[in-house]
Image 1 (cartoon, rainbow, N blue to C red):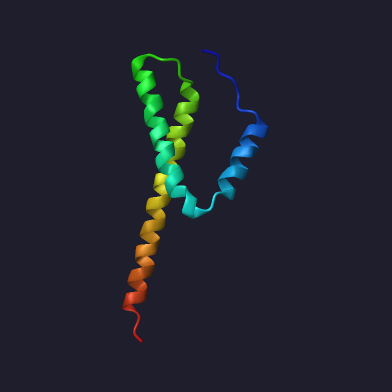
Image 2: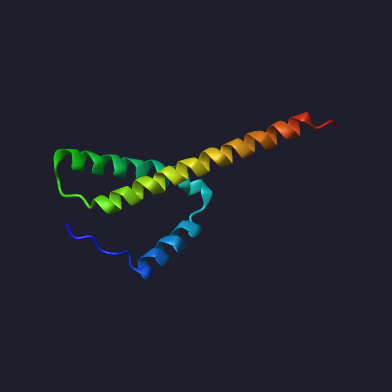
Amino acid sequence: MKVEAISQDLLGAFQVQQLATPPQNMVGDFSTHLESIDNRIMSVAKGEQVELHELMIDIERAKLSLEYSVSMRDKMIDAYKEVTRMQV
């Protein structure tokens, strides 16, 4: 298996794509992304040819997305609690 470096134009295109994705579409994209990762992990388990470095990058991307979502949820809950504690 030959490992190649990620080109700068590919990296730049990924960053632009991530910034252009509105939050509403991230939920559906996240679930389809997880299904894709699961399918590729099953392919690795079966011994099929899979690019491992791309799989690891996708797994880390999903991990970061999940951590971001949990952090946003916690901040929203904290904000809700602050609003409910306000005296009118």
